[in-house]
Image 1 (cartoon, rainbow, N blue to C red):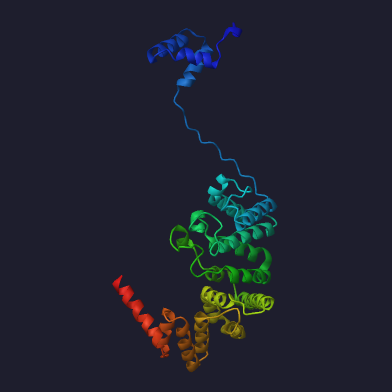
Image 2 (tube, one colour):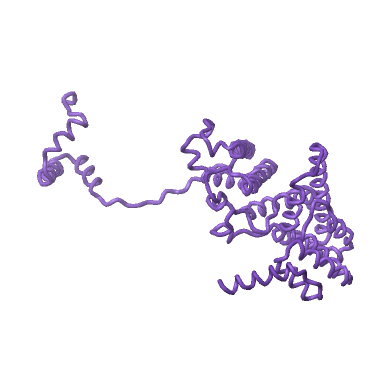
Length: 360
Protein backbone atom coordinates (compact mmCIF):
# COMPACT_ATOMS: atom_id res chain seq x y z
CA UNK A 1 0.00 0.00 0.00
CA UNK A 2 2.82 2.36 0.84
CA UNK A 3 4.15 2.02 -2.70
CA UNK A 4 0.84 3.31 -4.11
CA UNK A 5 0.79 6.54 -2.06
CA UNK A 6 0.51 9.83 -3.93
CA UNK A 7 3.51 12.12 -3.84
CA UNK A 8 3.26 15.75 -2.66
CA UNK A 9 2.49 17.21 -6.09
CA UNK A 10 -0.20 14.61 -6.84
CA UNK A 11 -1.83 15.09 -3.44
CA UNK A 12 -2.06 18.89 -3.76
CA UNK A 13 -3.35 18.50 -7.32
CA UNK A 14 -6.21 16.40 -6.00
CA UNK A 15 -6.97 18.90 -3.23
CA UNK A 16 -7.10 21.78 -5.72
CA UNK A 17 -10.49 20.57 -6.94
CA UNK A 18 -12.09 20.63 -3.48
CA UNK A 19 -13.78 23.66 -1.99
CA UNK A 20 -13.36 24.69 1.67
CA UNK A 21 -16.48 22.80 2.82
CA UNK A 22 -15.34 19.49 1.34
CA UNK A 23 -11.84 19.99 2.82
CA UNK A 24 -13.31 20.51 6.28
CA UNK A 25 -15.51 17.39 5.90
CA UNK A 26 -12.55 15.26 4.82
CA UNK A 27 -10.47 16.49 7.76
CA UNK A 28 -13.34 15.84 10.17
CA UNK A 29 -13.81 12.26 8.98
CA UNK A 30 -10.09 11.65 9.34
CA UNK A 31 -10.08 13.13 12.83
CA UNK A 32 -13.20 11.35 14.07
CA UNK A 33 -12.47 7.92 12.62
CA UNK A 34 -8.68 7.98 12.73
CA UNK A 35 -6.42 6.40 15.31
CA UNK A 36 -5.32 8.33 18.41
CA UNK A 37 -1.93 9.44 16.96
CA UNK A 38 -3.73 10.90 13.95
CA UNK A 39 -6.18 12.80 16.17
CA UNK A 40 -3.34 14.16 18.31
CA UNK A 41 -1.44 15.34 15.24
CA UNK A 42 -4.52 17.14 13.87
CA UNK A 43 -5.20 18.76 17.26
CA UNK A 44 -1.58 19.96 17.42
CA UNK A 45 -1.86 21.51 13.97
CA UNK A 46 -5.13 23.25 14.94
CA UNK A 47 -3.81 24.61 18.27
CA UNK A 48 -2.94 28.36 18.27
CA UNK A 49 0.75 29.03 17.88
CA UNK A 50 2.44 30.05 21.12
CA UNK A 51 5.32 32.46 20.74
CA UNK A 52 8.18 31.20 22.86
CA UNK A 53 11.21 33.49 22.81
CA UNK A 54 14.32 31.65 21.89
CA UNK A 55 17.23 32.09 24.23
CA UNK A 56 19.84 34.29 22.60
CA UNK A 57 22.98 32.41 21.90
CA UNK A 58 26.06 34.03 23.29
CA UNK A 59 28.09 35.43 20.45
CA UNK A 60 31.53 33.99 20.21
CA UNK A 61 34.33 36.41 21.08
CA UNK A 62 35.84 38.05 18.05
CA UNK A 63 39.26 37.04 16.77
CA UNK A 64 41.26 40.31 16.97
CA UNK A 65 43.73 39.33 14.27
CA UNK A 66 40.93 38.33 11.92
CA UNK A 67 39.09 41.58 12.66
CA UNK A 68 42.22 43.58 11.86
CA UNK A 69 42.77 41.68 8.60
CA UNK A 70 39.17 42.28 7.49
CA UNK A 71 39.31 45.95 8.42
CA UNK A 72 42.58 46.46 6.56
CA UNK A 73 41.16 44.76 3.48
CA UNK A 74 38.01 46.90 3.60
CA UNK A 75 39.95 50.14 4.11
CA UNK A 76 42.35 49.27 1.30
CA UNK A 77 39.50 48.60 -1.14
CA UNK A 78 37.70 51.80 -0.12
CA UNK A 79 40.79 53.96 -0.59
CA UNK A 80 41.46 52.32 -3.96
CA UNK A 81 37.98 53.31 -5.18
CA UNK A 82 36.73 49.72 -5.42
CA UNK A 83 33.38 50.69 -3.86
CA UNK A 84 32.83 53.35 -6.54
CA UNK A 85 33.58 51.67 -9.87
CA UNK A 86 33.25 48.27 -11.48
CA UNK A 87 36.03 46.55 -9.57
CA UNK A 88 35.62 42.78 -9.51
CA UNK A 89 37.01 42.68 -5.99
CA UNK A 90 33.72 44.24 -4.78
CA UNK A 91 30.41 42.96 -6.14
CA UNK A 92 27.65 45.39 -7.20
CA UNK A 93 25.51 44.20 -4.27
CA UNK A 94 28.35 44.83 -1.81
CA UNK A 95 28.96 48.31 -3.26
CA UNK A 96 25.35 49.21 -2.50
CA UNK A 97 25.61 47.77 1.03
CA UNK A 98 28.92 49.42 1.91
CA UNK A 99 27.47 51.34 4.90
CA UNK A 100 26.43 48.11 6.62
CA UNK A 101 29.88 46.64 5.96
CA UNK A 102 31.50 49.80 7.36
CA UNK A 103 29.34 49.63 10.48
CA UNK A 104 30.01 45.92 10.97
CA UNK A 105 33.78 46.39 10.76
CA UNK A 106 33.66 49.42 13.08
CA UNK A 107 31.68 47.48 15.70
CA UNK A 108 33.99 44.45 15.44
CA UNK A 109 37.03 46.70 15.84
CA UNK A 110 35.64 48.17 19.05
CA UNK A 111 34.81 44.68 20.37
CA UNK A 112 38.40 43.65 19.68
CA UNK A 113 39.61 46.34 22.10
CA UNK A 114 38.42 44.13 24.96
CA UNK A 115 40.66 41.21 23.96
CA UNK A 116 43.58 40.13 26.13
CA UNK A 117 45.89 41.66 23.54
CA UNK A 118 44.27 44.98 22.56
CA UNK A 119 46.84 45.91 19.89
CA UNK A 120 44.98 44.39 16.89
CA UNK A 121 41.78 46.09 18.03
CA UNK A 122 43.60 49.39 18.49
CA UNK A 123 45.07 49.12 14.99
CA UNK A 124 41.66 48.24 13.57
CA UNK A 125 39.91 51.22 15.20
CA UNK A 126 42.77 53.47 14.07
CA UNK A 127 42.34 52.30 10.47
CA UNK A 128 38.57 52.91 10.60
CA UNK A 129 38.96 56.44 12.01
CA UNK A 130 41.68 57.20 9.45
CA UNK A 131 39.23 56.16 6.73
CA UNK A 132 36.52 58.39 8.20
CA UNK A 133 38.90 61.37 8.05
CA UNK A 134 40.02 60.39 4.53
CA UNK A 135 36.38 60.44 3.37
CA UNK A 136 36.16 64.15 4.21
CA UNK A 137 38.62 64.91 1.43
CA UNK A 138 38.17 62.04 -1.03
CA UNK A 139 35.13 60.16 -2.29
CA UNK A 140 35.30 56.47 -1.41
CA UNK A 141 31.62 55.50 -1.45
CA UNK A 142 28.50 56.40 -3.39
CA UNK A 143 27.15 58.78 -0.80
CA UNK A 144 27.03 62.54 -0.39
CA UNK A 145 27.82 62.15 3.33
CA UNK A 146 29.46 58.78 4.11
CA UNK A 147 29.73 58.99 7.90
CA UNK A 148 26.12 60.09 8.26
CA UNK A 149 25.05 57.22 5.98
CA UNK A 150 27.12 54.71 7.96
CA UNK A 151 25.93 56.19 11.30
CA UNK A 152 29.57 56.24 12.42
CA UNK A 153 30.39 58.61 15.30
CA UNK A 154 34.15 58.99 14.97
CA UNK A 155 34.63 60.67 18.35
CA UNK A 156 32.94 57.74 20.14
CA UNK A 157 35.32 55.30 18.46
CA UNK A 158 38.30 57.48 19.41
CA UNK A 159 37.07 57.75 23.00
CA UNK A 160 36.89 53.94 23.27
CA UNK A 161 40.32 53.60 21.67
CA UNK A 162 42.00 56.18 23.91
CA UNK A 163 40.38 54.85 27.08
CA UNK A 164 41.75 51.40 26.25
CA UNK A 165 45.21 52.75 25.44
CA UNK A 166 45.40 54.76 28.67
CA UNK A 167 44.19 51.86 30.82
CA UNK A 168 46.31 49.15 29.20
CA UNK A 169 49.55 51.03 28.45
CA UNK A 170 49.78 53.90 30.94
CA UNK A 171 49.94 57.65 30.39
CA UNK A 172 53.47 57.80 28.90
CA UNK A 173 52.78 55.40 26.02
CA UNK A 174 49.28 56.83 25.70
CA UNK A 175 50.70 60.31 25.13
CA UNK A 176 53.22 59.01 22.60
CA UNK A 177 50.54 57.30 20.53
CA UNK A 178 47.48 59.51 21.05
CA UNK A 179 49.02 62.91 20.28
CA UNK A 180 49.89 62.14 16.63
CA UNK A 181 46.34 60.84 16.30
CA UNK A 182 44.95 64.06 17.77
CA UNK A 183 46.91 66.11 15.22
CA UNK A 184 45.71 63.86 12.41
CA UNK A 185 42.08 63.43 13.45
CA UNK A 186 40.82 66.51 15.30
CA UNK A 187 38.02 68.36 13.53
CA UNK A 188 36.18 71.31 15.09
CA UNK A 189 33.27 70.81 12.72
CA UNK A 190 32.92 67.04 12.99
CA UNK A 191 33.55 64.20 10.59
CA UNK A 192 30.48 64.42 8.37
CA UNK A 193 30.46 66.45 5.18
CA UNK A 194 27.22 68.38 5.66
CA UNK A 195 27.37 68.89 9.41
CA UNK A 196 23.75 68.06 10.15
CA UNK A 197 21.85 64.86 10.86
CA UNK A 198 21.91 62.24 13.60
CA UNK A 199 25.68 61.74 13.62
CA UNK A 200 26.84 65.37 14.11
CA UNK A 201 24.49 65.67 17.09
CA UNK A 202 26.43 62.88 18.81
CA UNK A 203 29.97 63.99 17.90
CA UNK A 204 32.38 65.49 20.41
CA UNK A 205 35.63 67.29 19.77
CA UNK A 206 38.62 65.13 20.53
CA UNK A 207 40.01 67.85 22.81
CA UNK A 208 36.96 67.32 25.02
CA UNK A 209 37.52 63.55 24.91
CA UNK A 210 41.08 64.12 26.12
CA UNK A 211 39.97 66.53 28.82
CA UNK A 212 37.73 63.83 30.28
CA UNK A 213 40.49 61.21 30.17
CA UNK A 214 43.60 62.98 31.45
CA UNK A 215 43.79 62.38 35.20
CA UNK A 216 46.44 64.74 36.56
CA UNK A 217 48.85 67.61 35.74
CA UNK A 218 51.72 65.26 34.82
CA UNK A 219 49.48 63.59 32.22
CA UNK A 220 48.69 67.00 30.70
CA UNK A 221 52.39 67.89 30.55
CA UNK A 222 53.27 64.52 29.00
CA UNK A 223 50.59 65.00 26.35
CA UNK A 224 51.71 68.58 25.65
CA UNK A 225 55.30 67.42 25.14
CA UNK A 226 54.27 64.64 22.81
CA UNK A 227 51.91 67.03 21.02
CA UNK A 228 54.81 69.35 20.19
CA UNK A 229 56.81 66.32 18.99
CA UNK A 230 53.91 65.31 16.76
CA UNK A 231 53.81 68.82 15.27
CA UNK A 232 57.57 68.58 14.71
CA UNK A 233 57.09 65.41 12.64
CA UNK A 234 54.39 67.10 10.59
CA UNK A 235 56.71 70.05 9.89
CA UNK A 236 59.54 67.69 8.92
CA UNK A 237 57.25 65.87 6.49
CA UNK A 238 56.26 69.21 4.94
CA UNK A 239 59.90 70.22 4.63
CA UNK A 240 60.73 66.87 3.05
CA UNK A 241 58.00 67.40 0.48
CA UNK A 242 59.43 70.86 -0.29
CA UNK A 243 62.94 69.45 -0.73
CA UNK A 244 61.75 66.72 -3.10
CA UNK A 245 59.83 69.17 -5.28
CA UNK A 246 62.45 71.87 -5.26
CA UNK A 247 59.89 74.61 -4.65
CA UNK A 248 57.42 75.73 -2.00
CA UNK A 249 55.11 73.09 -0.59
CA UNK A 250 51.84 74.38 -2.00
CA UNK A 251 49.54 72.82 0.56
CA UNK A 252 51.56 73.59 3.70
CA UNK A 253 50.04 77.01 4.40
CA UNK A 254 46.50 75.78 3.82
CA UNK A 255 47.04 72.70 5.99
CA UNK A 256 48.63 74.84 8.70
CA UNK A 257 45.59 77.11 8.82
CA UNK A 258 43.19 74.18 8.87
CA UNK A 259 45.20 72.48 11.60
CA UNK A 260 45.29 75.59 13.78
CA UNK A 261 41.53 75.95 13.34
CA UNK A 262 40.80 72.32 14.25
CA UNK A 263 43.12 72.40 17.29
CA UNK A 264 42.03 75.80 18.62
CA UNK A 265 40.11 74.39 21.60
CA UNK A 266 42.96 72.03 22.49
CA UNK A 267 45.32 75.00 22.46
CA UNK A 268 42.93 76.85 24.74
CA UNK A 269 42.94 73.95 27.22
CA UNK A 270 46.74 73.90 27.24
CA UNK A 271 46.83 77.68 27.71
CA UNK A 272 44.61 77.35 30.80
CA UNK A 273 46.70 74.62 32.43
CA UNK A 274 50.36 74.58 31.39
CA UNK A 275 51.41 77.83 33.13
CA UNK A 276 50.20 76.37 36.44
CA UNK A 277 52.08 73.12 35.72
CA UNK A 278 55.46 74.86 35.09
CA UNK A 279 55.25 73.98 31.39
CA UNK A 280 54.65 77.40 29.86
CA UNK A 281 57.67 76.94 27.58
CA UNK A 282 55.63 74.43 25.56
CA UNK A 283 53.10 77.17 24.79
CA UNK A 284 55.91 79.25 23.26
CA UNK A 285 56.80 76.36 20.95
CA UNK A 286 53.18 75.95 19.86
CA UNK A 287 52.79 79.69 19.24
CA UNK A 288 55.53 79.78 16.60
CA UNK A 289 55.34 76.24 15.27
CA UNK A 290 55.74 75.92 11.46
CA UNK A 291 53.05 73.21 11.34
CA UNK A 292 50.46 75.85 12.33
CA UNK A 293 49.50 79.04 10.50
CA UNK A 294 46.83 81.67 9.95
CA UNK A 295 44.41 83.71 11.99
CA UNK A 296 43.61 80.98 14.51
CA UNK A 297 47.28 80.71 15.41
CA UNK A 298 47.41 84.51 15.79
CA UNK A 299 44.39 84.29 18.10
CA UNK A 300 46.27 81.78 20.25
CA UNK A 301 49.33 84.03 20.32
CA UNK A 302 47.19 86.99 21.32
CA UNK A 303 45.62 85.05 24.19
CA UNK A 304 49.06 83.91 25.30
CA UNK A 305 50.41 87.49 25.24
CA UNK A 306 47.35 88.71 27.14
CA UNK A 307 47.79 85.99 29.79
CA UNK A 308 51.36 87.23 30.30
CA UNK A 309 50.28 90.84 30.62
CA UNK A 310 51.63 92.06 27.26
CA UNK A 311 48.60 94.11 26.18
CA UNK A 312 50.38 95.86 23.31
CA UNK A 313 51.50 92.60 21.73
CA UNK A 314 48.03 91.12 22.18
CA UNK A 315 46.42 94.10 20.41
CA UNK A 316 48.86 93.89 17.50
CA UNK A 317 48.25 90.15 17.09
CA UNK A 318 44.46 90.57 17.15
CA UNK A 319 44.67 93.23 14.44
CA UNK A 320 46.92 90.98 12.38
CA UNK A 321 44.53 88.09 12.88
CA UNK A 322 41.58 90.16 11.65
CA UNK A 323 43.45 90.78 8.42
CA UNK A 324 43.56 87.01 7.90
CA UNK A 325 40.09 86.20 9.29
CA UNK A 326 38.06 89.41 9.02
CA UNK A 327 34.76 87.75 9.93
CA UNK A 328 35.84 85.72 12.96
CA UNK A 329 33.59 86.62 15.89
CA UNK A 330 36.13 85.55 18.51
CA UNK A 331 38.72 87.98 17.16
CA UNK A 332 36.20 90.83 17.01
CA UNK A 333 35.11 90.14 20.59
CA UNK A 334 38.71 90.07 21.81
CA UNK A 335 39.45 93.27 19.89
CA UNK A 336 36.55 95.00 21.63
CA UNK A 337 37.67 93.63 25.00
CA UNK A 338 41.29 94.85 24.80
CA UNK A 339 40.83 97.88 22.53
CA UNK A 340 42.66 96.52 19.47
CA UNK A 341 42.41 98.29 16.11
CA UNK A 342 39.96 96.65 13.71
CA UNK A 343 41.04 96.89 10.05
CA UNK A 344 38.59 98.56 7.69
CA UNK A 345 38.14 95.35 5.71
CA UNK A 346 37.23 93.45 8.88
CA UNK A 347 34.69 96.14 9.86
CA UNK A 348 33.08 95.86 6.42
CA UNK A 349 32.87 92.06 6.58
CA UNK A 350 31.44 92.24 10.08
CA UNK A 351 28.78 94.72 8.99
CA UNK A 352 27.78 92.65 5.97
CA UNK A 353 27.48 89.55 8.15
CA UNK A 354 25.34 91.47 10.64
CA UNK A 355 22.98 92.68 7.87
CA UNK A 356 22.74 89.17 6.41
CA UNK A 357 21.89 87.65 9.79
CA UNK A 358 19.27 90.35 10.53
CA UNK A 359 17.59 89.80 7.17
CA UNK A 360 17.43 86.07 7.65
